[in-house]
Image (cartoon, rainbow, N blue to C red; front, side, top):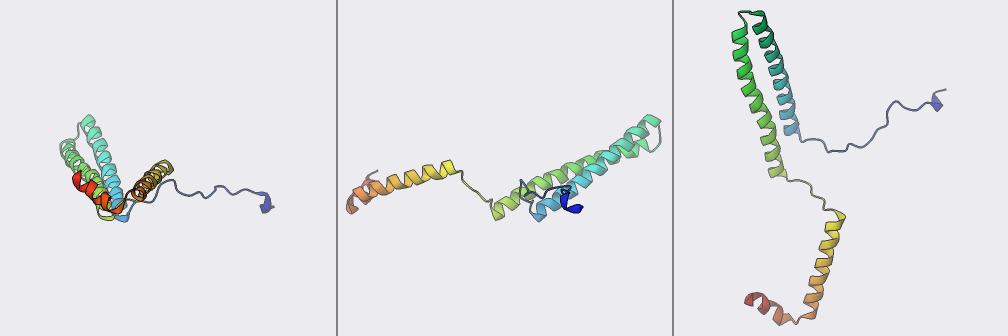
Length: 127
């Protein structure tokens, strides 16, 4: 009876590569800080509407948390840039670019093959 059933989901390859560990850690930290900041902002807003004594400290904490949240988001960006600078990015040129480079390379080889050996160095020095 189970033989005719389809699975609930199909496993597919991810469209994007997984983020590096330091970048992912910074991103999770930033999401948590931003979530706490939003909760604090809502508490401050509701306390202000209710006229509670806790409203002023809540607003001050929300301002401080906003600064920390901005710092956390910038940390994600900086960590990502540092990772890319240290480890590089995997670049895969498109087939069009590869074909154009191949044609240029072949043209240069043909030019070099047609010139005598002594002239190639003198032309470059004159230029």
